[in-house]
Image (tube, rainbow, N blue to C red; front, side):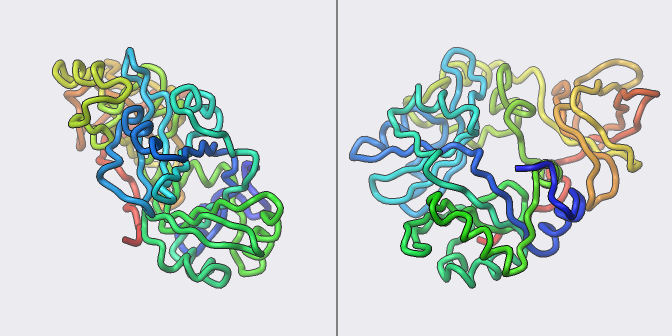
Length: 327
């Protein structure tokens, strides 16, 4: 996926917010688990509770370091059939998932196209009638040119849309068909600004080594009622003690973008650092996410250190732009 296509990052970003665009997200991994023990294998490994959903649904969950509780990867599980699951990690972390779960790596066998935006379903329904009827975080099977595909009501933009897993032999045909229907391609730049506006974490930034779900405000992903999952004891200890830092949003007052790794200060004292930052095409100001000391929350006036001086900002509640999912 390039940084942008011919229209540029801001145009691609606004196409997702106002109409529809598509991303080639084949860099996501796919680890397939099948058989009568697949449910139990996932349930005792990952943080969320699969018992809350059923076949035909998707679930957001985490793979944790068992010793520290750090997020090894954040994952979407597609529960495709009674005994068939596609575990979708970030591609660079697929080996970690395979080390924790006895699945089959099918990443190289398919392409994943994410069609996102308020007109995404209207565009895709001309190809798949099922796309209209796949609600947010649901999964459906279909076919394209005689090949089996999977359609999921998921994405990473804060907008409605679907992700389509399609076998390699017909992937180019599907991409070109969507182009003919007026769905423009979007690149990595827009994918990052969209997820930032939506307050969605990125592994290696808001999640990763030394960062737990509790610090990132994702405690809802952790089913403490389960008797077993990797990292459970470490998170229970952190929960009892209280987190040492928390993830917040930062909204600037000018078009100057924030960047990763900038210090966040109050009255000249560092209280944290940014993990992601950019310019918001919708809000037309700089925005960022970062970790700060737990005592600081929404409404706090801060400054972000940058080359040339300090950028005034305010801690705000995430997301920056309200999510627009179809239920």
